[in-house]
Image (cartoon, rainbow, N blue to C red; front, side):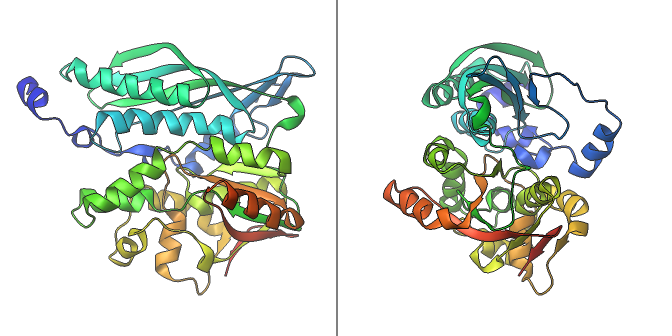
Length: 346
C-alpha cells in the first residue's frame, strides 16, 4: 500500500468527502450549540451569541483581533491547489468580518504513508497564500490520520467599529455576490466523469481566489452585513443572514451567477453529498415556488472558498458596481432585503 501511494497519489481517493461539503450538518450544529453556554465578556465583541464567520476580541479602542479556523479533506488531487484552496477558505473568514489576516497556524492530519514531498507542497502553497493575504504562517500541528485534512487557524485585525457582522442586514438593502456559484457541482461532476478538465480548472481558479480584493473595495462603502458563502450554500447562508438580522431576504434566481458548466451538471442530476444536508437546514425557511430545479440546486450547492454575500443600502449599489467593474472584480446583484422573515426566491 505504501508503494502504491508513493508512486501515484490521488488525494481525493483518500477522502470520504472533500472541501466544504464535508462540513458538519448546519441543522445538527444549531442543535448542538443550542445547549452550549456562550462566553460573556465585555471585550468579546463577536462570539456564539450569535455565532458569525469568526470570533472578535477587542484589545482597545482602535484594535480588535479576529479568530477563526477552518480545515477539510482534499477537494482536488493536486497538492499545491489543495494547500492554496484550504488556506483561502480559512483566510476568507477574516475578510468576511472586515479585517486583514495577521498570523496563521497549520492544522494538518495525514497518513504516514503519504510522501513527505506531497505534504511539503501543501504546506508551501498554503504559506504562499497566507503571505499573499498579508499574513505570516508561523507554525502548526500535524497528526496521523487515514483521511488527509488540512486548514488554518487564523488571527486577523480589525477596527472595533469596522466589523462586518452577518446580523446587520436592513430593509432597503441590496444584496450582492462577489463570486459565481457551483464549485461543489463541478467537483462532484468531475469525480463522476461528467465534467472535463477545463471545467475543473475554472472551479479551482475561483477557489484559489482570495476575497481580499472584494473586501478592499467594500470597506469605504460601509456594508451593513457580510458573510462568505461556503458549505451551507447560498440559501443556507442567506437564511442565516435573514434570521439573525430579523429581516426577509428576497433573491432573484435568474440573477444567480454560475461557474461555466455548473448548471449543465445540475441539469444532469449531479449533486454533492452536502446538498441534502443544506436542504434539511434551510428549506423550511426558503420559499422557492416556481424556481427551476437547476437554479435551486445551484443555490443549495456547498461552496468551497466561496465569495462574499453583501448587504448594503441600495443607493450605494451603483457606485459599488462601478468600482468593482473598474478594478475588474466580479460582482452580481442577486436580491434585496425587506421587512419580514425568511428567504423568498423568485
